[in-house]
Length: 109
Length: 112
Image 1 (spheres, chains in turn cyan, green):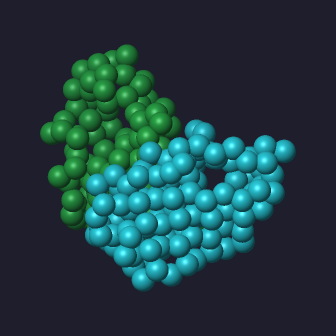
Image 2 (cartoon, chains in turn brown, cyan):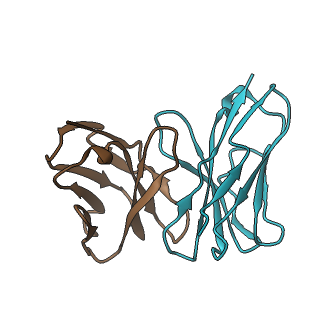
């Protein structure tokens, strides 16, 4: 049930863009994206429900392809504060989230 | 909104001892979740409550793990007869229905 994330790690220069992918072998109810910095709690970024709707705020957006059971997180014009580990959490029903192994993102000056 | 609060932040105990962690959710949230996170992995779902009812507990790691939410407010997670493999970060999250889950800072458990 664990979703597969790619890439495992990304290093960016400030201002560059990145895409993080999340795929599931099972039909999903929703996809949740979180960012976690070392020693801190995961912080909610956005949720995508069935329907392929793309959501976003500021320079971070995400999409959900229901046919492929894939979601992508788009980070544009990256900032130093974007560094951390990004997790997608997938829900087969309305409650339990199954998290991938995470994508480590480092933004350098 | 004071956020999800977890206590203690760190717990060090000897193998075989029992430990209990507390989670205070965001006040208006009716759902409360427990996850475990080990190094280099994403959080792993353990159990969840809707109000005081524990609606999913099949994914608790063994019968040494139990959770309660007696009055539908705070929750406790207990691990009995701790083992080395129980060392991990234990995260609590809460939500209002299907709305996004918000996590606490976790309790880091170390087994000597």
